[in-house]
Image 1 (tube, rainbow, N blue to C red):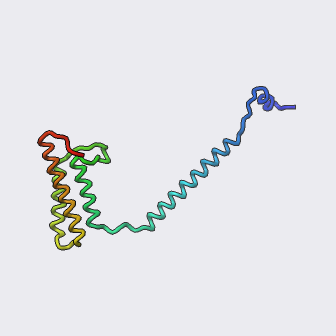
Image 2 (tube, rainbow, N blue to C red):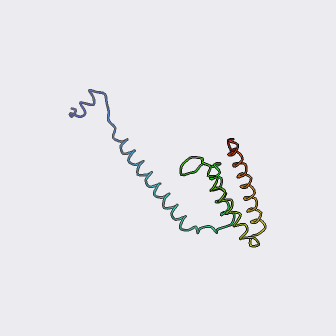
Length: 141
């Protein structure tokens, strides 16, 4: 004889399987554990790895990127927009020039060449951008 629950299932032809609920709960638990392990691994790696040594190349790369954003050649990651700020671009180019002057004689040949290349490239880009702005042309990407 069937009890009331079994009788209802037999009449409707529907069979409820609660195993899937356990499987979903187990999968969630497993994913949570994996995420916790990943986080602890990342945190441990961050603690174990000392920060890199500062270099003139790293400093120049940062200033280069900022200048490209100021020239409107790169998207500002905060706003998602490309806006030319020529005053800021000029300030950054002048800053790199000042750093080149102040470090003269204290850099290796490779470092000095890197700074010069960055400065030359940015000066050329600045000139093109100001010419395009004066002529109402669109700046090259």
